[in-house]
Image (cartoon, rainbow, N blue to C red; front, side, top):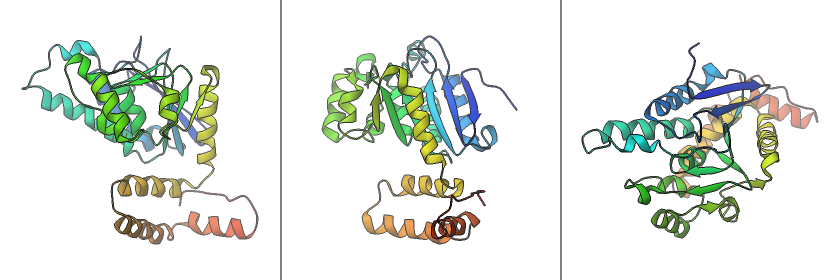
Length: 257
């Protein structure tokens, strides 16, 4: 199995942790974007036993954004190819077959905010700060990802100001599940991941696919799509095991089949 320069990962039972590891602040380079896409596009290969993945950053910060040195050479001619690599990295996290929990400490700015918002759930440390600093450095992007965490008024404020916003201010809008002490961050993120991982891996995959698909659909179309997945999931052994375990008042044993 190939190794990664900027990503570390480890499995622990039904959960796993993926670490962004590019010191000092985990700023993402074009090569790191490629690695993120490679990893999350093939998450079943790298984390075959995990049902839920925690995404965290090594060091003091979750992710300090895009590597600004690379913006120096950005041009109208090379930007389409570079921007494609960026968005494909974010989309690979969002579309990953396994649910993801972002564990955010320190800075989550620009790219860091987008990575966190691409995860299904976010747990933040008290020292976590979020921002879209693109207007400060002459680029655009990230507002659409931020709209998954806060309402439009806050999106516009953060995008137009470029200012840092404490995790507590995001939390009150519901975009962050929990704000905890810095020392508790990984413990709480892991506990949340464990609580999700008790469910059938097949059901979790269907649930994530469903939520990603219906997020911007209207009520009738979205619910019809959800029902179609119920029919598909009913063909899995895990579906029957879930019902039988409930009726028999016992802990279910899931296989993913």
